[in-house]
Amino acid sequence: MQIPTATSPDNFTPELLGSGETSCSTINKGGAGPVVLVCEHASPYIPKYFNGLGLADEIKSSHIAWDPGAFDLAKCLSSKFDAPLVHSNISRLVYDCNRGAGEASAMTARSEIFDVPGNVEISSSEAHARIEQIYNPFSITLDKVIEEKKSLIATPLLVTIHSFTPVYFGQKRDVEIGILHSSDSRLANEMLALAPMFGNIKIERNQPYGPEDGVAHTLEEHGIKNNLPNVMIEVRNDLLADSEGAKRICEVLFKLISLSQPKLVNSANGEQ
Ligand SMILES: [Zn+2]
Image (cartoon, rainbow, N blue to C red; front, side):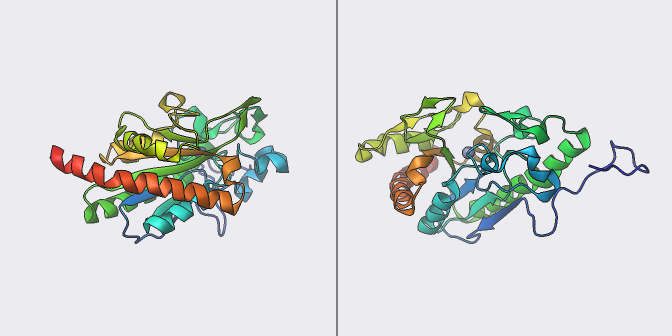
């Protein structure tokens, strides 16, 4: 990176996104369904500015850069619910939009067993620019979509869609779908109560991660602060490897969420 001599490094803000590169997008913005969908790890795209963060091609397309299959699954749910879907257009290795500004893991120098050379020594001006140009637009976009949805529907649900790798640090993972929550477990509880209807799928609470792993940022920042019942869905990515599998999981999640939704509206009304 070249820093102009006329400007002090602390005041210099690099332009990280070039022509045609954007932080995030919204699909089905005016969708009338009672759900707001989010996919923070939808894309492995690394903007040109970063020179691939010094990673080999096979790492740039691996699960450390994004959640393979999650975006297609989120789009399927967006279509079935007629719900807006806010998704990142940039790899989580550049900025993980499921992490708050200032969290070290938002721009990690090591993910699982891989080093990320371009994140080892990030200047303060570049770190600030990543927050300003990648995280903030994502967060503001999601805020606006939620605000609009809340003005039309009493108790919309916030659902974030992720995938996880079947083998992590050499350990095989048996769980197939994780239903994750932080301090607000309303939606997760309803979904888990219904999960036995899909007895052939291993569905578990707060697996393979939980809020203690720092993965609940979007739920807390956008769900809990807005008092929206919220859940983070983690699907083992081998189940999303082909379109048949992804469609099956989409049907399962659509059923679990849509059967849960009316109960949450009733309980919210009852409490008011
Ligand atoms: Zn994810």
